[in-house]
Amino acid sequence: MLEKFVAFQLFMLADREEKGATAVEYGLMVALIAAIIVATVALLGQAILGAFQTVLAEVN
Image 1 (cartoon, rainbow, N blue to C red):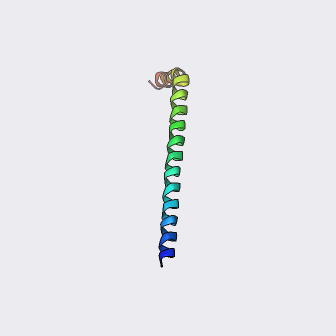
Image 2 (spheres, rainbow, N blue to C red):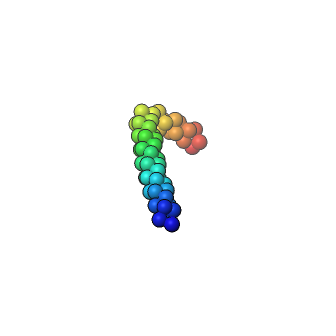
Image 3 (cartoon, helix red, strand yellow):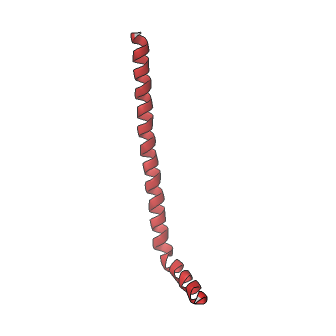
């Protein structure tokens, strides 16, 4: 019985460590995606603004 209990504890501990690592990996991916979005908006922001202003002028 003790062997099964220890095996269950080890299984739960391993599962918890993987979830923690997965959360960290997802956090890093979200941070990278956010950095790419910020860089893209910073580089193309004025061009996109000009395009929207042109469309707005044509609609009005």
